[in-house]
Length: 213
Length: 358
Image: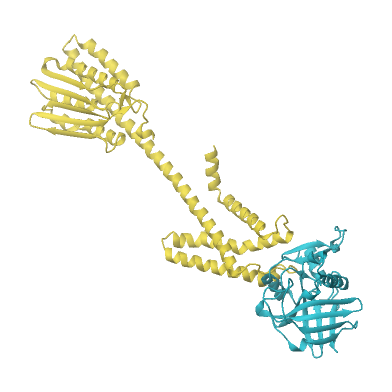
């Protein structure tokens, strides 16, 4: 249902305004993909939101990766609604990441749904016993670097609102190919502020710590 | 003016190198930046990217080409060039994956191109720079060749002028001797001879400085010369001449026949106390002219035979070598009684360019 997909995108945008780095191309290649059984199950974060991770069975419809790889269906439910994603676990330099992608099940069939361009987002994943720590790729960190002309990677800037003179009113869509994205993550993935931390170096509020139910 | 400017430009090497790298920098900047949007970070990236490219290019230009290609060590050159391309492409990868963080801390660069792509970049730049160097060398070589040809032409012109000028005193010396004998003998033909000589000298002075003269005029002057000699020798010699063919509209190098005629008079009539003869035959063809002179063999005095004879013919051969190398025939033959010389030279038509002017 495309209306549901639209809702989930809006939900993510509302939950994490200006926090997600979006990419047109996936962050993983087929060779990096892995599947961990211990991620399956139902999890709850500190805001009592419920995360259900199930093994994805079948890729179909418009929203599917180029090659079928092991993936998770992620359903997140909180008091504002439900959003569904396809998440693909992969490892780079020994570090686990999840590539989030809007799920086919969340796609609406209305006309506005067809206008949505699905994008990938990236989160660093650490499995710590019975809890999972998920930290999204910090968009603000990247936007600051773009604004200061300190980083060079293919991207486009899309306005958030009409106040386009304000640098914070733009969001960044990465358009670099997967190979380039991975080189960047490998080299600067451990940079302070790239994941989880805010500009002051504190744990960002968009880092989710999930505990198994 | 433009040519001079171009030559100066080609010789200003620092300017060429500056131009090459500015053009390369701009070209790479256009490749590396998004269409219509050049960011300051792209300027920095392009500048850093060019450093190993420049190192590879100059290694080829300053070391590999002069030391290997210039010494015809082609196989070694190809090996060394391939090695340097591989090395500098790898260094470029290393620069942007590691060293750039030390050189420019606070900037976030990665090595955006695969090794294969970098090899293509480095190969293209090295090849273009090498071709520019070789074409510059070719241009300078052409310039040197042109200058050498110009110098050779000037040298030939000077030599030709020198040879031609030697005819004048040679002819004058003989003519004055002839006039002297006429005056001493109180000949009535002396005034007419002086007039003919004057006309002949005027021709020598004003008409023969060009590469080619009208064949008709040249033959007329030679006929005048024969008349002078006929006046001098009187009844002692039978002087005959015949011109076959039409000289009109044809041109020839000046004074080719004079040394031959002088020679025949000097060694035929002058060297012979008794009756003697000179026969001058000219056959004019469409493209060439044949001149045959036969005279009786005289007995010149030993001093003249040792010093003077041969100068005229030798000079003539040198002139012909310069004027129409390989296209003439000059042969002499002799029997105990008759000396014969044959000259075949190419003729030119009005409006044709001079060989030496081409």
